[in-house]
Amino acid sequence: MVDLGADHALFSISVASEVTGVNPQMLRVYEQKGLLAPHRTEGGTRRYSSNELELIREIDALIKTGLNLAGVERVLELQAENERLQRQIGRLKRDSANGERPKS
Image (cartoon, rainbow, N blue to C red):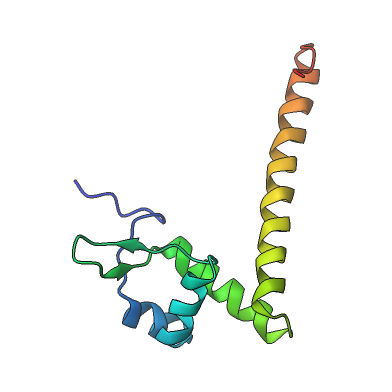
């Protein structure tokens, strides 16, 4: 059975463009700048997952607020760091509630 989860790359660049409203050339620029990393088929065709479509929408929204691509990249980095720290806090809280000592 095929995994059709949010990480499964199903959508071509034309479908990703239509669904997100971002033209294919900008999707290529996002990839070139390292903001996106779509899956590539053996033939080199880009395929986007549902998660990547959400990321494209987020990038587009940030650009519409006036950020340039470097600013968008920094926001995405900070969001990822925030999520990592939130997970770490969650682990520390669980460890503390279980009477375990923090791992250094």
